[in-house]
Length: 223
Image (cartoon, rainbow, N blue to C red; front, side, top):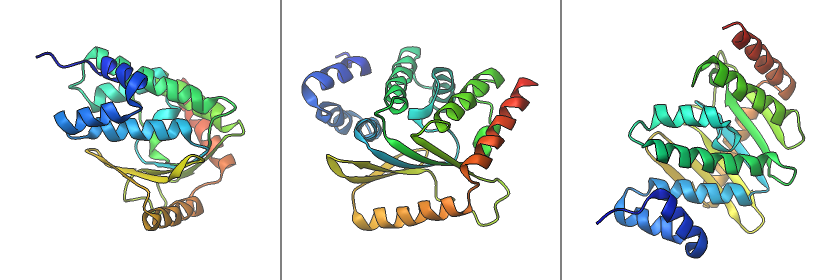
């Protein structure tokens, strides 16, 4: 029997499942990875505040199409061209929500090395950095970076975000290359809020971070 495509499953889920159909499918046929990604995407769309720490790449809801496409192709070479494009468009939809005036307030701390990577080439990275700068120059994104030379880097346990929504409990999402963990446990949230505060404490301020990002854009112009 042929397996339904990801597009068909998402369409049916949007119409009748409200998130449950996709999660059930993954529970029955896979390792659940698609299920937690889908659930986190729903939380982001409903969020009022997101505290985000990223180590390797910019968050999915702050990616250009070209940057998303490059990341997915490099990170999931088993995906078909159609599956890659479906995921790119899903990220684009979340990004449009984040970028508009009613999107969530985002506090984002990144590792400085994110800016030095050239996913998709210099032109793609320049577009991505310029997009993030535009977002950070607005009112809804506060951006800081932890210098690569920081000797007391508290973010060595990997990326995570804390998502606050008026219609659901606060949620913590922490991930590694293989899986993600979604938790509403108050103790887990308390610990990661403390960790996020520590990251902000050692990170460069928003103005310094934007200056560093603009300087990286200038370097890309010369590549």
